[in-house]
Amino acid sequence: MAPPSHCRTVNGGAPRNGAIAVETPATSESSRLLDADEFRRLGHQVVDFIADYYAGLGDYPVHPGVAPGFLRRQLPADAPCRPEPEAFAAALRDVRDLLLPGMTHWQSPRHFAHFPASSSTVGALGEALAAGINVVPFTWAASPAATELEMVVVEWLGKALHLPGSLLFAGGGGGTILGTSCEAILCALVAARDRKLAEIGARRVGDLVVYCSDQTHFAFRKAAHIAGILRVHCREIPTCRDDMFALSPAALHATMQADVDAGLVPLFVCATVGTTQTTAVDPVRELCTVAARHGGAWVHVDAAYAGSALVCPEFRDVIAGAEAVDSLSMNAHKWLLANNDCCAMWVRSPAALVAALGTEQEYILKDAAAEGHDVVDYKDWGTTLTRRFRALKLWLVLRCHGVEGLREHVRRHVRMAAAFEAMVRADARFEVAAPRRFALVCFRLLLSPEKELAGGEKAANELNRRLLEEVNAASSGPYMSSAMVGGVYMLRCAIGSTLTEERHVREAWNVVQERATSILRKRG
Image (cartoon, rainbow, N blue to C red; front, side, top):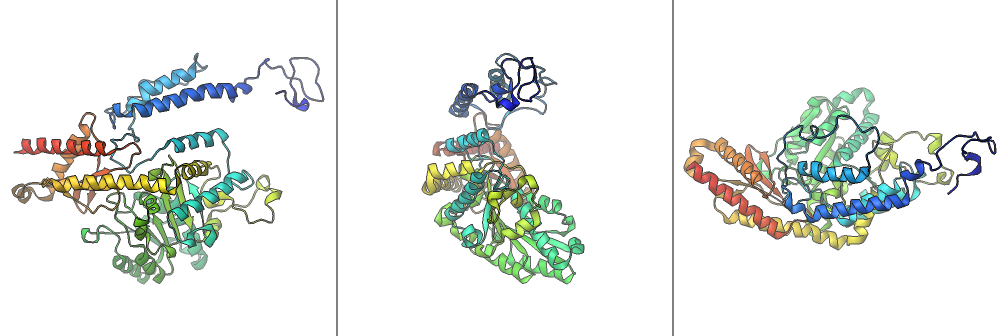
């Protein structure tokens, strides 16, 4: 397509139509940067590459046996001055030969170490579609369809997760899509901080106190620090096995009351539905009651992992009382096939979020079409101005799988976890170390009574550390992780990879048993 006459460039000669003549090559380099035919050619290469990767994923060890610096030594110290011939194909070969052997393969069906980073064909292609369109929807005017699709999608998802109406747009609340739960917690904290300081005065920021359990993700403490909460004012309340490692409302009340008596100001309670260590569930309703007694402290529910399970009606009880919370977040990229990154957050009072994070509209951000309308500008709902069109892939996932498809996806993993738990319980040498609520099984190898009497918990913990090392060192074996809860070291088997099948779970347990037999034999 020829450029408009007022900006036409020519190869020499006098200026035309008042434009300055500029000498350029006959074929503009910029026209090749997004050439449709070239995009199609290279895009086919990428799709074929990814498809081949998934087809051969079982051939890779889940976790690579590499040492720090292994890749840096194989790549040049400087970027190329000019591209090599067929540079893209050459780079893909390096991805295959250099990068993939050094990756932890999160999509492997034998990856049981972490909560899943779930992938799907639709989720991945949705990412590609969003990257290709490449809009920046920081305001409604910046991309009206992107903003309104995000509003629609978070409402769809909130209803699918059985969230209370108070958190949905239809009930006066609303939602947004961020990158991670870490961002969501920070945004909620800043909104709570500014709302409280508007009541008591900004000078008392040093008196604000926040609360969590010793099982709460470290992201909360990091967010509190960023939000200006003194480190000494972040209360980690101990949990115990008798309470299934959940945050005790009585302990929370006692801690908050002690702070009030000391002249401090309770600000924020972070309740978790599905803790990282053991998937413990904090009692939301009771914690909200305690928070209400202490100046209406903001209650946020971090359901990063287990929030996806709310799509199944049988798990609705884990957020009983959520109608009283101020905010809730969950990672659809963990278990709902949406690919990284995709964290949905809902708030009961969007005005509190906008008051804390909103910015005055610059002239270039204004749009006449939005004047007089109550539009959402999502730049005021998060910490960043530039934001990705994440709603597109989530919309595609919901459309192409449907709520029932997502329920079956979650239930399939829960069934496999129940089967793994049954295998553990059937072997008297092992115990289930924490109650299973979703698709995580925490277990450990037991010492014989005489050895336990001689070595105590320390010896039992060392035994299980050795077991985990042996399991993860197995060729083509599973990759698991550990937790230390209440002084007890346990192995974690988190089932959630899209590609995991029942046979992978059985094979994983066989490796655990074999390694346990070998270790116990050597110990005599």
